[in-house]
Amino acid sequence: NLAAIGIELQIFQEYPEKKIPLLVDNLSIQDIYLQKEWTSEEMNVANAVKKACHNHLNWTEAYDQFLLHPEDLPLSIPEIPKVFTAFRKNVEKTQIRKCKTLPVPKENALKNDQTSLPFVKELGHKEFKWDHRTAFPFEGGESNALKRLNEYFWETENLSSYKKTRNGLLGKEYSSKLSAWLALGCISARTIYHEVKKYEKEVVKNDSTYWLIFELLWRDFFKYISLKHGDAIFQLGGILQKEYTWTTEACLMERWIHGTTQEAFVNANMLELKHTGWMSNRGRQNVASYLAKTLQVDWRMGAAYFESQLIDYDVHSNYGNWMYVAGVGNDPRNRAFNVSLQAERYDPEQKFQERWLS
Image 1 (tube, rainbow, N blue to C red):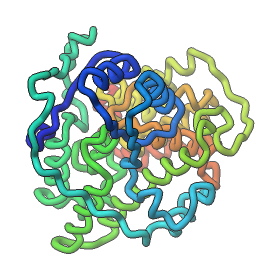
Image 2 (tube, helix red, strand yellow; image 1 turned 180 degrees about the horizontal axis):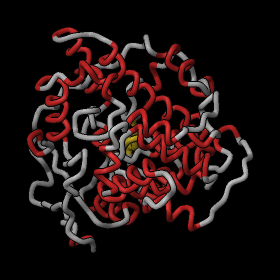
Image 3 (cartoon, rainbow, N blue to C red; image 1 turned 180 degrees about the vertical axis):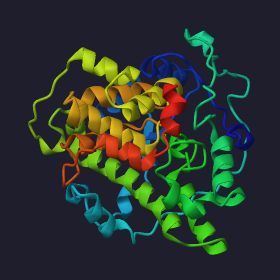
């Protein structure tokens, strides 16, 4: 898709602070454009690249992962509320920027310097095959993101019932499944938002169409929380700096990871994650609550495991949600899930549990 507008995608398996300075010198690059980051590991890499390059470069960093651009917010970053409802009420009438039009194609300076995407085996891993039980046989790229958007909105009109089905556990259609493409930058929150608005004009405007935008606002909320609080989102006490008694007992973590706890619903969800890299939102809340509140295991261990497994991993949503569930973040009521009751409510016939435990 980039090639069609004269942009070549170059892929390198090297540290950016070593490779990018070489490209800058070899190609006489004067301008570098990049996504503006604020979490520590990403900032460390960006700063290392800047340090390794010569001083005559123009660096343009842009916030491009939000639905609501920071410059458009009706409140400053230090004023971001700790509770989502207060944030939503402050920002939901904010005008969402339109998507930019594609540039006019032009000749590519790097057309004779092709690189290729490495195969899984070349990276030292076994050949990957989708588990036939997965609810989300994901394939990356912008084209697949737009294809899924079209399927979920226009072909099936499943968007019309999103609020009723979003807590589902089985199949592709209970939720939009757009989170992985969002996390990887294959599609933007603004693209999804404006497509929802188009759908509301042409098909129906209801609680379900609003709820998808509501979820995009949650995504933004956790990004703004991490922008406001920085590395506090990675600390044991979270943004509240609360002290609890946590354990780091390895055997508890192992049982949770491999689905051998005393809760069948937790086990089924954890096995789905282990074998597919995916878990429903309902499952994530339950397994996280079980680890942090029931087993009282250091919540950051769970967050780190999710980071290693989820195909839709997003640093802000991941750590924001884990803090929330663990009682050190943005939940004003500090709730704990009753996993057995949740299983009865959302998997009453135990079809999901049977799929992963039989």
